[in-house]
Length: 296
Image 1 (tube, rainbow, N blue to C red):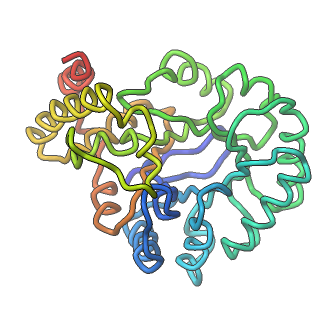
Image 2: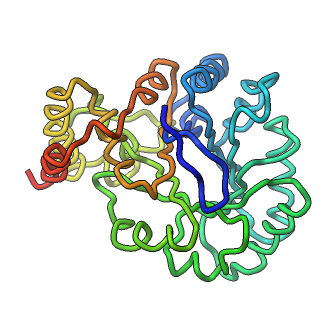
């Protein structure tokens, strides 16, 4: 496992982060025992960053149980206020998170989305840091202009944004500019919520309790297009002796300013696959072929 620093003065984190949305049940129900085993395997594999959120259903509760008895300074715990970004709403959210996660502090406390006016929300995060309830602060799904409106206070170390072969807008906006501001990228959804796993085909129908059932990218021609791209990428991955999942995740880490890529997992087997990612294996010739795949 490789490690990179989060922000200018933030903690060192594993380049692979454990994304806890799937164990919360948002992509189909996951039994608590299986969720807990997945978290413990992640720690055993050298994954030190665990990311969750107020909105991630059962995720914080499952994590709290899984991390019980684990040395607190052995992992970096990130969570988010997801709904009410008023000072009172943020304070209520972090107190609930602390209770569910069974911890005295959060390592990186984030706002889940941008919402005006942003100043009172950021001021609240700064105060929570001063009070010791969080060590660092972060934001999620911000453009660089929105990030600038926060004033980028001391301790703001990360911006969590979607990044994968189908979602590349941050290459023109955030990646060139955030490093200069001392803020790192936490990439989420590197597998495009599953299309870049090789597990699905054109006939796939997602169950009612899976968020993907009603997402446009998993319907009709667009879903078929993404599946076709995944097949082309899978052929490249096979030549390299890796899985499509490992190829897709490694591709997101080719920029050093992406401090960590959060990969969701529902099982220990998936965690082990993610932990085997080696971004250094992607030479210039491979990257050229990978980036040509979406065009056919």
